[in-house]
Image 1 (cartoon, rainbow, N blue to C red):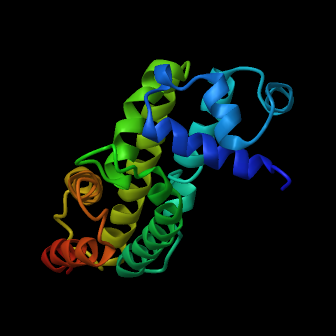
Image 2 (image 1 turned 180 degrees about the vertical axis):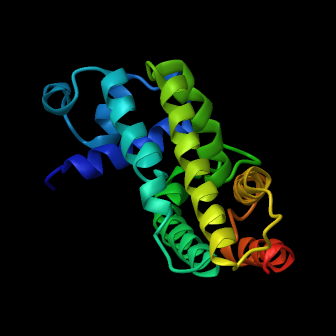
Length: 204
């Protein structure tokens, strides 16, 4: 079977979730992916180079603000679009994350494997701390712009605090994502109910 770059990255992603970066050897990677060391080096010369490509593909690109936030005429529609984008991401992720589950990893789920993977980024991806800060600032900026526009249009109450409201929506999303990682993964319908509860209290 031909090994595509996408399959290579996906198999490596699964392996990095199952084991810490330090425990994943180049030999383990080549065996899991089905390539010789020479074949692997054609794509990525080192384990770190491969790890960084995995992070770019399955973290930064997938969760980029442009991938989550779709322009909308109203804030209510903006929320619906965000939830739909999250739903698509979750459905796509599930097919990949489930591959990382192992009987030997008692008490760990596919989703908790993902959150265990995240801290490794700061250790083995040079400049990740700065990139993550920019990443989340773009997220918050998108929330702020949407809230501000809704206040200006009269959809939200004029005394709505832009910063607090942006933080609230963002933190509910991140908090539920983390808490649900220990069980079934983020339930988008539950997230929707939480968003609707907040929206009902700030709409004009």
